[in-house]
Length: 307
Image 1 (cartoon, rainbow, N blue to C red):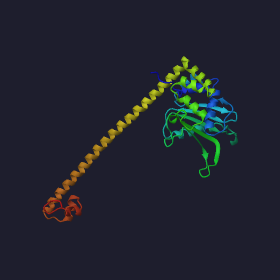
Image 2 (cartoon, rainbow, N blue to C red):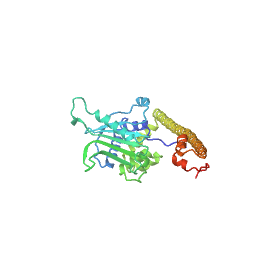
Image 3 (tube, helix red, strand yellow):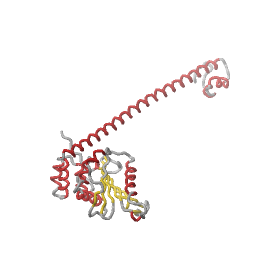
Image 4 (cartoon, rainbow, N blue to C red):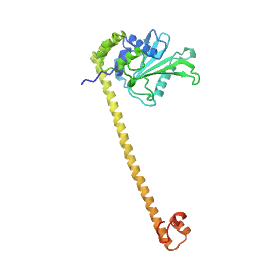
């Protein structure tokens, strides 16, 4: 059975959003995210890092980076992350800060700074405490919820939680996330194009990509690279479990030997104490000779039996 096309493949994403003519679908996707978070939408975007297949081929990063700027100077960065961990939010914040700091040139005042919006498509569950597909983070006062600045805006979209038309998302973002998660593109598009015309352009760009032998070759290389990375991580995880079990067994053996030695030494001390007790030696002397406490010695009968 043929494996479904992976629309989260970074080669496809970069082509889809940033190759010539990609501004339309890019703007619509960004606005869908903004509408979902009850934010203002944009009228136009300019792509800052156009798709370059030769450059992309040399790029071994698995994180997608699409960057554009709106008419009012707001910078929008889009990333796709296939896997992550509990420290992923710090990584996103760090990447946001790099893009924000680059806005200010030497000699410029702080009023030259503009908002930077980070949109993250995650193919894993980041926040397991709730079922929200889309979360938006900004800087607020913890007491009265007043917004400090609108310059920081981070959107997390957790695709593993997404179920088409079975969520609280607004219509436009629902369509886009359906595009990024569908297992049958043709069937999905035949239904959605009627409801959302921009999807006809999205379908066209998708078809252009899969019909290009050169781009599909790079797509397959990225898929294989990601698969190999996943296998490598799984092997390391299994090796870690195996090593942990080995160390646990060794530790258990050492503790058992140590405990056995201590028990043996104690039995030997009790045996000596019994003999000295039969010889009518006083308890203080027996304690000094064996290391047993006075209380333990007093529990022994004169005939050597324990009470």
